[in-house]
Image (cartoon, rainbow, N blue to C red; front, side):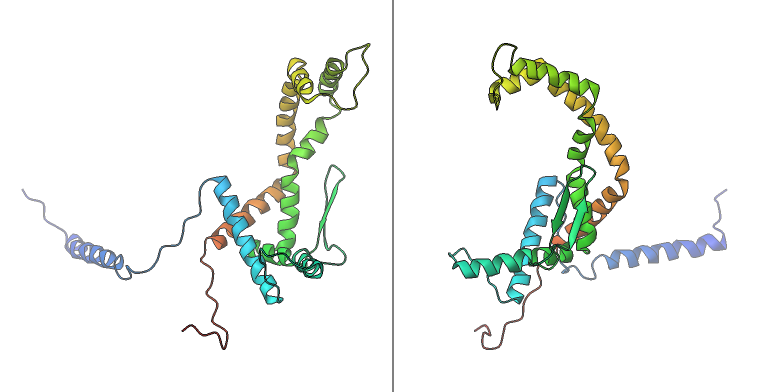
Length: 239
């Protein structure tokens, strides 16, 4: 016996067909809209994209201050003005002291800082996150410096590059230093300790890493946007 459609099923069939027609029609309402450029997947390409956007925003800032960047030689006074406008002057407002004891500072009033604020959304948060993330490896290396395994490997390396009875050179020959680092296990010891310490350091700076990724991802989206067209100035209308 053939199955009979219930009243609900009879209503559902034409409704589904109508919905499909609507959805199909929506895909071709504005076929002329340009697609947003995609963010490149490779890290090196992303870095290049961010650098280009940063340079573009910095040039915009300099132009707003009446400075035009060219490849032509500049007079000393002009070069000094460019450096001041680009990097800022006076006391350094941005400062981060790392776990290694080093302090990194920068101006917040120069066009480079303005460009980074425009690109990353908050130059103070980006400065702190970038400085911390860029120095994670240095912090890990500082943490294992006094490790007994590292000290023992370092002693073997020192004896290799400056054997007893021979004067210790102020600066070992690069080839001897590299050979001894391999033969004494210094390279392997440092790599092993660094991997372990990096895991700890990354856990300690989880907040900075999260901020770094979030601000960088947003900056990449801003960087792929085409630059806004500048309206022609009076007297320079296109012919």
